[in-house]
Image (cartoon, rainbow, N blue to C red; front, side, top):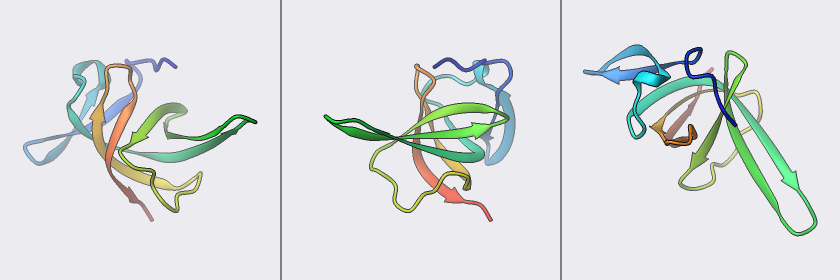
Length: 100
């Protein structure tokens, strides 16, 4: 899945302060903070099943990956996540905080 890089804006931490930077300016591996709504899909088939996680920001879906499967998350939850971009435009999550 490809995300239009010009339209998506992320909040980067620069000198301890959030700064808005378009994705092309953020290099793979840079730590960033994103806010959006969680979307969780379950793919179930006879040989296997898997759970897919996405962060939705302004109608864009960012594929998420976790070091270990997160617990008690539901689709529609507003979240703030911290992590790093991969070269394939997936986002490796190191911290997830539900927003109220």
